[in-house]
Amino acid sequence: MATPNKTTPVNTSANSGLDYLRRILLAPVYDVARETELTALTKLSSRLKHNIYLKREDQQPVHSFKLRGAYNKLACLSASQCAQGVIAASAGNHAQGLALAAQKMGIKATIVMPITTPDIKVDNVRRFGAEVRLVGKSYNEAQAAALKYAENERKTMIHPFDDPDVIAGQGTVAKELLQQQPHADTIFVPVGGGGLLAGMAVYLKQLRPEIKVIGVEAQDSACLQAALQAGKPVDLAQVGIFADGVAVKRIGQHTFDLIKTFCDEVITVNSDEICAAIKDIFEQTRVIAEPAGALSLAGLTKYCHQETAPAHKQQNLVAILSGANMNFHSLRYVSERCELGEQKEAIFSVTIPEEKGSFRKFCQSLGGRVITEFNYRHSAQHAEKAKIFVGLRLSGLENERQQLINSLISANYQVTDFTENELAKLHIRYMIGGNSPAHPQERLFSFEFPEYPGALEKFLDTLGEYWNITLFHYRNHGAAFGQVLAGFEVSNEQQLAFFRHLKDLGYQYQEETHNPCYKDFLVS
Image (tube, rainbow, N blue to C red; front, side, top):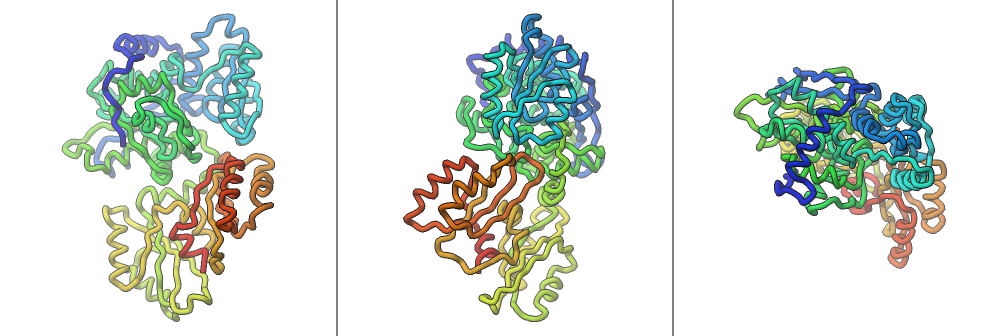
């Protein structure tokens, strides 16, 4: 968690705040957008002991708040700019919002999207009448291409968040919210580039300064938290891919100046916590939020569980459901991970005797607790002891997981907790039984693997021709990137060349050679 610096930055003043307030009040977004509902989450309110509300931006025609900012920006263009057309780089909600806004105003829109963009998003943008150009393997490459097209074709570039008119358009969410719940105490807003948080915070703090405004970031793409620590916007070395709607490397300058002044606090949440929030939203509303859309509810839930959260009185807490453009194939991942996010499942490596009846005895030691997963493979090299990979259902009580570990240790079992181990959750649980004698030169790496034609061939051309691949496991959840675990034989003399080739490959990677779950389950 980080707290913004409350000193006023050079580029932000009271006058600029008032200017944004005027822009928000006059924004003509309702020509195309609709006023969305504020839904009371009664089941979650009972669980968290506060009044929980959800601002339903999934109800927009494009199922995202992005339509507001895009339309307001187009409404502020000159006649000549409208005649030349507009362009943007986006693989997500900004693309659809701009396409519909441009269609409504009769403006020609061009959207540059990476070739990794799922077909459903490309088709939706075309359905709204925009021209789609598929360029590059990443957002950065698409953005660079869009800038060149804009210059060569004299089109106006529409930024997804770092533009005063876009920020003002997004701020209309706060205007509606205050009308719907004038007694809100704390409002949680998702953060990617910062447009929604900046627009809402600047509006809320000038009309109701006592309302607490909290930004919520994905832990693996926390560009706002990095900027607050540095005192200015900075580039993240890499960003996570699960919550792709907020996967932004650098916070905007306009948005950062406003957030630093008008936002109270920033919370980060992990993927499992986001999955739990998606489940909570579905159970209450039957809406399937996209990961970025559920981000703020994940932050709200985490806030309520912290010791600093107000416990002395019931408060009105509001989260913004910012979007519901979920890729259907991602649901498998959400289903697998939501109970971990709710702290209702634990994953352990447990050493048991390699003898008849040991499985039954272990189950009996659990006192009737539900087993969600049980993986085992006999190893001839470990004749006396066996390691099992086991998932266990929890009730969600505080310290329950540690109490379970203590109970198993008291029963003379050796236990390693892998509940927070990403390698175990992404790969190892699907590979039990694939162990082999440890090779002294084997190095293990996890990769975020881009989904585009020829990606696997590039991987093999760069690495497979020079080093023997000793292990390979691939996982894809419908995103633009898959998850790969790969082992290589690399001698000490080859290390420099090997890491040079990794750099040339250009994929995000992390070495996992010393990860304990690798040692427990993939080597004998």
